[in-house]
Length: 175
Image 1 (cartoon, rainbow, N blue to C red):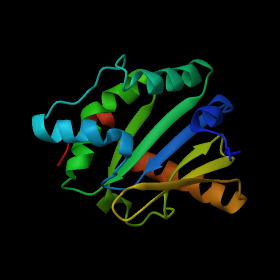
Image 2 (cartoon, one colour):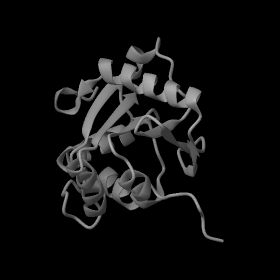
Image 3 (cartoon, one colour):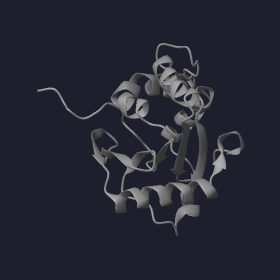
């Protein structure tokens, strides 16, 4: 039976002002990254070409939203020294920026006194949350949508608190 839940592309297409993404895991085991991650681990080479088959759909999606006036921001809370996966993410973050995202990094030790939700999320127009649920090893399990006002406030406040302390990608040095 087809899912009635909107895709990420549909959620972003319906977004009018802002889309913010908070990432708080040190490792993800996302199926569509497995081959690229393994290649990077072997060679140190990462696909960072915004026009590649791997990146072009994401770049198109984000750049279309940005061209409509949507501000897209991503904040990553990371442990230091960073994990191998975070090094892998960092190696291609220039693609996110080329697409129009603003990206910042916050060392986890600087987030100890912040109230953060239990899961990564996207927040669209400060009204709709798309929670990301992962297993303990970082495998994606499912996404869940919520418009609960208390959860929306928690996510908006948490994101802004992280954003205020975090370092822009171009100034963040991996440790």
